[in-house]
Amino acid sequence: MSREWHNSKVLVTGATGLLGSHLTRALVEAGAEVVTLIRDFLPKSIFFQDTPDWQLNRKVTQVHGEVEDRELLERTVNEYEIDTIFHLAAQTLVGTANRSPTATFRTNIEGTWNLLEAARTHAKRIRRVVIASSDKAYGNLSGEAYDETFPLKGEHPYDVSKSCADLIARSYYVSYGLPVAITRCGNFFGPGDLNFSRLIPGSIRDVLQDRSPVIRSDGQYIRDYIFVEDGVHAYMTLAEAMQPNAGKVSHAGEAFNFSYGLKLSVTDVAQSVLSTMERTDLKLDIRNEATNEIPIQSLDSTKAHEILGWKPRFGYQEGLVRTVQWYRSRAKELGITLD
Figure (cartoon, rainbow, N blue to C red):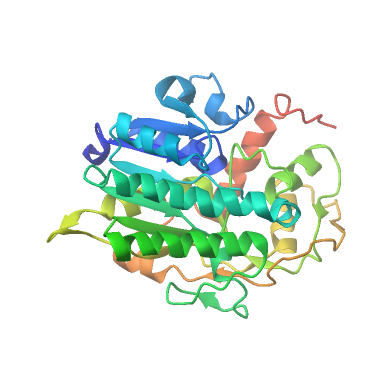
């Protein structure tokens, strides 16, 4: 247990999500006093699982509400004397953003400035704020491996929401000196992801039900994927590196990419699921229906490796094995009927 987190008072927004649940657990285990902002009660979320492994809902303070509610955020930061913030709450699905851009903009953009304004209002107590951006914030930059010097050029609703939130976070450091740092990661996967419209959990569910994995795109899109536990390690590594230094906070105002550096197509990923589950007899159901998707995205994580010393603890394949094992063990409670 790191003394870094002992008695630190941490706010996690989006705590019932995939990354949020795992990060909250790691913070509790590290000795932090964690306050979570929760919009919806999701009974199947691992956050609410009443098992010896988790029981997070019994180990943290829960505040119920939305990031669109600035007064609630200010009250939470003030009353619970928060010193560290991980802002993960977001509308994260591209398809949902395409159908409801306004709601996505409100959550991802307005929610971010509300959170940052709450932190600025009580800045005397705030040691560090880590804002979750995304590789989508870069937009479509011709398939290069983006490093942190690349411009943010989102074009479609979800991508624009992340570009804006990212830039707003940087502005709170430049204009007000708020100790903000930004993470840009690829697609998270791992135990507890309940969004079966996503490639990996959707493919695992299909295979468990003896069906061909459904591919919404043409299968050729290139993406970065990162196991959720490696993502947790990345977020905590960055936060731990944000220390007072000559009147400033180290790495405040900076962004960091976190990635395995793998260029995997949608087809590659689906085939790796089939291989891991020993069902290479199944064929992919490629429907080519996806819209407003960036053809190629790849992140360069050299900065995180060299400056933060971050290295993944699991990697893609071990992460995938652990993910498959979890869905197999929880299939019944997730409503997955095994063939």
